Amino acid sequence: MKLENICFNELCEGVLNQLKGRGYMDSTLTMYRRFYNRVHAFINERGPDVYTEEVGREFLYNLHVSDKTLPSYKCAIRRLDDFINNRPYRCHHGNTSESVPEIYKEILNAYLEQCRNLGNKPYTISFKENACVRFLNYINQEGCSNLLSLDTALVSQALLIYANKDYYAIIRMFLKYLADNGLTQKNFSGIVPHYKRRKVLPTTYTPEEICKVENSVDTSTDIGKRNLAIIRLATRMGFRSGDIAKLRHSEVDFDTGYVRIIQEKTGQPLSLEMPQAVSEALLSHLKNMKDLPYDSFIFHSMSAPYGRITTSIIRHVVNEGFIAAGICITGKKHGPHSFRSSLASSMVNDGGSYETVRKILGHTDPDVIKHYAKTDIENLRSCAIAPPVPSGLFNDYLSGKKVISHV
Image (tube, rainbow, N blue to C red; front, side, top):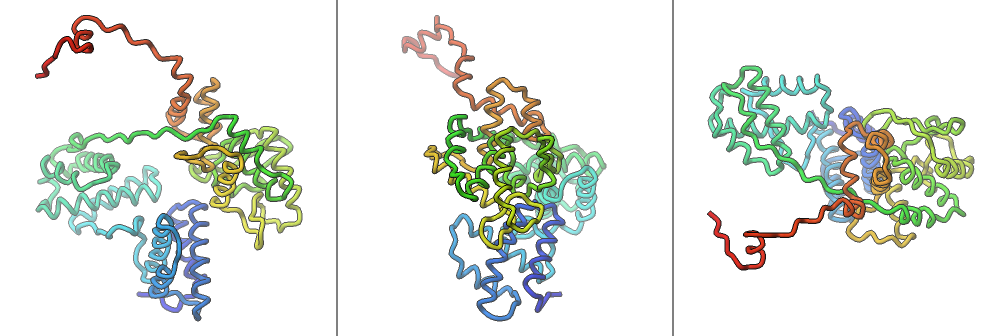
């Protein structure tokens, strides 16, 4: 049944609670709330405080944002539309929603329940469900109404529907589950190709460039004192922007010199000793914030209503730092995460162990850190081995004296 005449604030809280229950991070919820504040202002200009699908379409029609930002607003509006129409949660609103064939519904539900019991997060469950539904729909359309009749040719054909090769690993696990439970005659997981995404080297900046960014901050103003504390948490301790935005007074102990947080991305605890430069910047910032309302958070917007700082503000602060320092950012990432990458790369290249760097950055996978070593090109040059001088047939080939025919 459609929800009608529900006030907009109540509607927003319903959508945000739905997303929170699905495991969305605080930074993402803050972004949605910012979008909905803009929709609310649009509604207030036109009369009753009630949202309808027509209002949503009109809002998007009158919206002036970049092509890059527009899809995010469209997704936020679709979530409002789904909520008032009592439609179930969908992970990817941009795609046509598919439902699993009735004959396979029980099998898929049992598989997804096993995934939940193994500790898969809601987003992972949704990703797996999407992949499996498409697979089951395809084989059903091809006349396979019983998994016992599934064969190699049909599995190979079904794999061609996925433009995103990340789905291959999911289908491989699903096929293994089917075989382990006697639902297929054979284990077809072995015929699914292994696809390994190319790891992109992280963007890094030199210690000299990082110092220029820190020194470019004007600490004669309250905003400057806040911005320097934010930047040093990223440059000296490798904090993610989400963890900086939600940092609380109770998590910073100036007596012991430690910061103890629960990481927003991983949910894992992290305890780090503050470098003196970080401690000094935080104390300088807090000394100037005594007149603001106390809400347990350390960083706030510097204009009314002085709410908790958002990750978008942090990105803006960092971007301004790069520009003020005159650092060339052409073709390079220049957000807060680039400081995190630079810190990791610097520690590895200075001889720090992978385990030490892993603990400081709060990673759970020990192999994540290793690709930071690849960014120190100059040190890698010293490891290069000179190639042997060519001789014999290979030398004749290189000099053009001999042509080698290939079979």
